[in-house]
Image 1 (cartoon, helix red, strand yellow):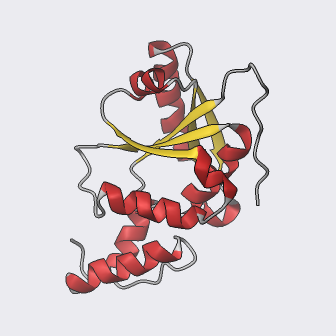
Image 2 (tube, rainbow, N blue to C red):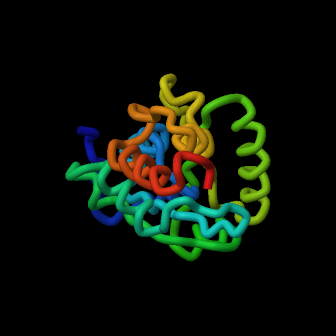
Image 3 (cartoon, one colour):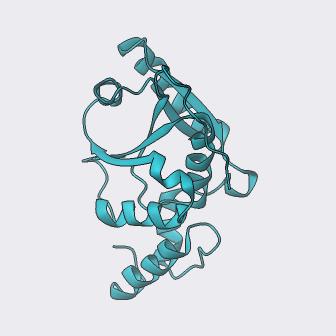
Length: 180
């Protein structure tokens, strides 16, 4: 179990936003979320309402997957779930968060995330971005890759929480094992 940080009386709570589509959540996402809970008093998992992506799972399903992946750990009480649209920094300011948590897998991730972080910093100088490297076993894992492999009947166990693995099998069983 990861030790919880304890706010000191009279200090402001450290709140971070961990944004993403999490469609579906991977073990890499879970790793980043757990590690961010070591640093922050509260983490808001902000599920992006991204019109460019057609999600495979509903928001409620995605939240359920995250809750189940975290289990009954004491930290689950410090995780909040929300849906947002628009500018991430506007959302952060509205929620009182001063840090955006982002996971990095490979150098290509850094280039893209760096551009976003610089733009976010320009738009809201009081909101920082914290990058966490994913664990080595998750370097190549992305939600898109997971969906593609699962859609063709590939085994994604060990890359996603068990509940996601079962849901993917069920989802693609209905479509005959081909891409939706």
